[in-house]
Image 1 (tube, chains in turn blue, green):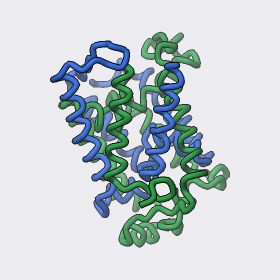
Image 2 (cartoon, chains in turn blue, cyan):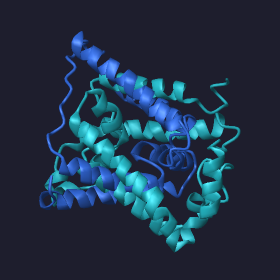
Image 3 (cartoon, each protein chain N blue to C red):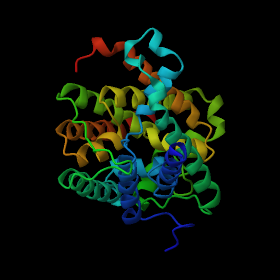
Length: 137
Length: 185
């Protein structure tokens, strides 16, 4: 049952990424050129609603569908890892035109070349894991 | 407006992303699409030598199922919901991209110059895809999250680290598009 729910949420996510064009390399380029409102509208509105949802769940102590208390894990404090990691991610996001969710959506959409990007992202994750203790955080 | 066959405007797409985040919270999970990359590393045995991947990946199996859904969703959307795949980017973006050599701008979903099957025999383009993917994977883990984990989930929870990460995303993206693209393309 739970597997079906995760799969359904994933399908909804995949359709949303493709239909919103957030999975399009062109939209990412356009966003970084500030030449359209589209991506800013998507992220901005998702964020406004996300803040209302998250703060609402906290304030009214909303339980999950399985009657569990919803706990939001705060992010670890720090600056370097977020800034340096963020810049590296941004460089890759603009170059490949896809972040980790849309990569899979595009593979499903039939772009076999995305498999190269996904494998490289897995490799990047692995190399981070190897170097983790040597990097400033 | 036809939500099945036409592209979704931002005011439909934004609420849909918020809905997906909400649904994941309500089934005791969190919206963050880069975690699955770590799960994959662990699944293929990276935990034997690297402690970062030494965890019970089976407990994270749910995010691999979400990924499977994202693949199926992409297949459905591309094959049954998108009669015209051209992305209507702005005219100035199209002309900028044509100047960089992207003739497919305005006529395709992804630039054919980077993502058609011809790239498998093009060393330069393959290198671009590998470097781009590597930076996404490495950067997301270093920063502890990606667009969904920081820009949506983290900022929704008013996390300062997420704001720093998102500022980083934009510094990196702007640097790539404005400074490095003219050198690469």
